[in-house]
Length: 432
Image (tube, helix red, strand yellow):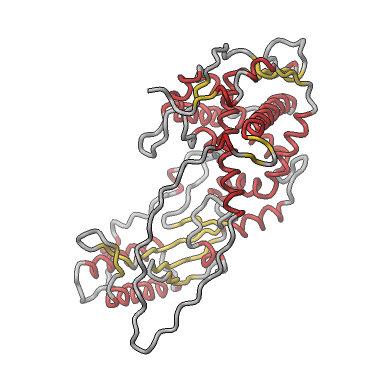
């Protein structure tokens, strides 16, 4: 099952370390929800405690969200510039080379001085952190009431997510959460509680809104949203660019472009006659290599012997019982701009009908031979992306439901604890 974007946005993208100067015990409860007579964090008897350490994570999330929402509103408020008409040129006259743009440094925004939704930064962040606490508590209680649980695979996924976030990832520049945690007195167990709760929220969401659920989306509506926003295709991608000795990107020669197009046309003919896609792709790649090596004879001629070592990949025989097969070799998934998938080529691919075989040219970029597939018949695509499609349909409704239900739970706010974490008490850079 997928990790949601919301988890990643909170813990993998924070750019500033937050040090809380107030020296308070991190096991102190900032909020208590439910039956106050029950033992601390006795969810089975309806009590959830939000410890200070967990509240700090909610605060970090709220701070990050303030920045994103403020930037989004600022961008939307910018006036749209009217397009300027190109000047009329005399015969033989060349257009002027535009001056090099002057790069102006972007000043860091001091969000603490800004307002959002009519609230100061401090009030907005604390209100958002409290909302997150309410949702957390409601998910814990409802998960228990619905008698839901994690599979062994899901539990393993949570443990792996916690471990990866705690350690960070040097390859993609993700800072270890352990650094943030050490500055703020947060233990790895608290991070685990947070990630597990996010997974509970996801499972509850699917419990309610998947087709057949208590508020289930009709299968037809889900399928339409899926096909309106995702496309699956087998593709052969041919770049129309090359680099010179200095690394400058240039268009390929017209003769090479024509040769590649000839090869793609021949490949389409083979596919329409029933040739296996992997074999056809391999033949094209061999011919492409001949062209790049400067050969000019028998570029697109091959024998059966050439295919003896053809690797078809992803054979279903290698799958374990119950395991969902991955995408087939050469298959790629594309998505609209609403999705997290590659949207660069989506629009032109999605208008094709299932089974269509087309050569698309993206000017100054690439040729793409495309075989449009039925994405709803791809077990991998359906399993992996249905949660995203469902959230596109019902994500806002779910967040409202969760907050509304959680707001009805009896709540005790530890004002002394919360006051200690007002924005005036926060330092935004780690001390050297």
